Image (cartoon, rainbow over all chains, first blue to last red; front, side, top):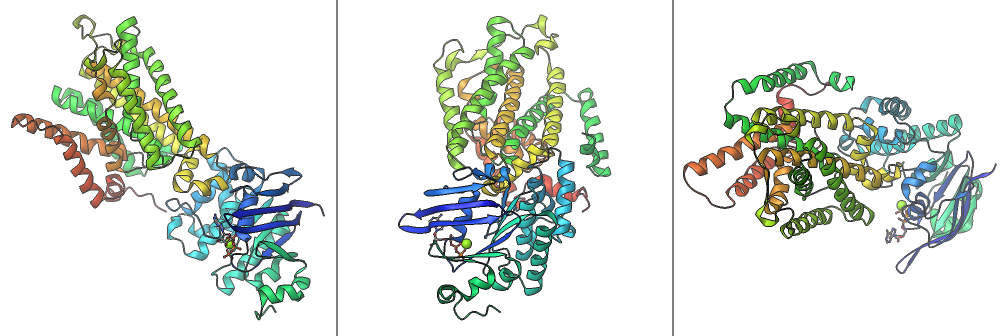
Length: 242
Length: 332
Ligand SMILES: Nc1ncnc2c1ncn2[C@@H]1O[C@H](COP(=O)(O)OP(=O)(O)OP(=O)(O)O)[C@@H](O)[C@H]1O
Ligand SMILES: [Mg+2]
């Protein structure tokens, strides 16, 4: 498998703080890749650099064979990277459907086509029945799903998911896990996800990267990573990973 | 286009057609004074719609829209005054000049991330500078103003906008209706969705691939152009232009009141707002004239109070409330 996304030695400094420190990894085409790590490890900062919110201070990001570091978020999305926000940002006054239509319009010029596509995506994410509601009236789990739906509607090749399971009940979480597995299997969508919930990570990820103080302390298959002494020491601790 | 009509509930279509028919035949029953009030209502509904596109849909606060109206009016009036070029041609020149100013303001604001209140200050600054420039130019008549001759023998040249109230009544009605149609069409387009996304959360919009800069620039260009058309209409209706009025912040505020009171980001908001506010304002003028009080700023204070009352009672504007009252909420 060739790499769809290649992160090569990128760093990001906020004033004194080195949030991401010469980080490198590759996400294979069609894979599900998880980034884990304690709070403040630099996970969201990594996503923000991939998604174009800010440029890395050094290093390179290559997507589908082309350099994308330093491009603006709209350009990155147009190239095929969809992202969700850890702190959800729906368009509050718009209906659920209209939120998703905005994403669907990226590659569609007619609103009617975009609406049809948006409805397909909403069905996939169990939001179809709530499509007429204002986004601001949704519960947090539904908002998280709306984030995914909106990003998915842009037809990404790579989907960046920033803690979409946080705050979900176990049954809701299992549902999202199976939705994502289905998407990955049926459409070949590549997924890069940040997650704290180890149960979801173990169920989904083909590969895991563990971030600590901005640097990678372990990378590999889920089984390798959870047995890694450095990981157990600095992140997993006494947490039950089984 | 057709689905714009079918999207309105049946009852709403009936109300709309009845109101439109009433407005079409109204001149037969109205005297000059009521005609003049309705002409102003149409004007404010139209330029309010233009401002609504920028603020209500694209979420960009302009407090200098008098600039576009003033430029449109002056350019067309000057072409007529000096060269006898009629407003049907002059309006294109007026729109071009206003759009060019809009492009500069938009580019400065959106390229350099001047947003919200700071963007509003930028729009005010442009209007103020233009006022000062026009005050100091002699060929525009300077502070003394520019006057278009009202020649009796030419009052039937409707194609030169030389005519009586009837001409301006129907033209105003056409503008108000046309502006609403255009806005409705835009709001349902790809561009309209992009505007809403930018208005709601620009960063999230960008991450969905929305070209926010482009969308906002188009909003300014359309809004400035429409407002300039309104300015041409007003200049030929009043036959006079003064920099101190045309580019005044008070004018800009008057433009935004109808959509704010009626309901931002709605098609009927600016129209409803204009129908509420303009008659109230005119009644106030008539009253103060009757009692011989002529306190400067009376109208501004009155508008301010009206705004405060309505914003307190109906923060989303009158139209969304009226729509529910009339049972026109689309079934979901
Ligand atoms: N825009 C910013 N400006 C300044 N500092 C920032 C900024 N964004 C993140 N940081 C800092 O960088 C560090 C990494 O933050 P980041 O949000 O990437 O962590 P994270 O791994 O996503 O954490 P969490 O699990 O809590 O979401 C933190 O110390 C944070 O305070
Ligand atoms: Mg984070």
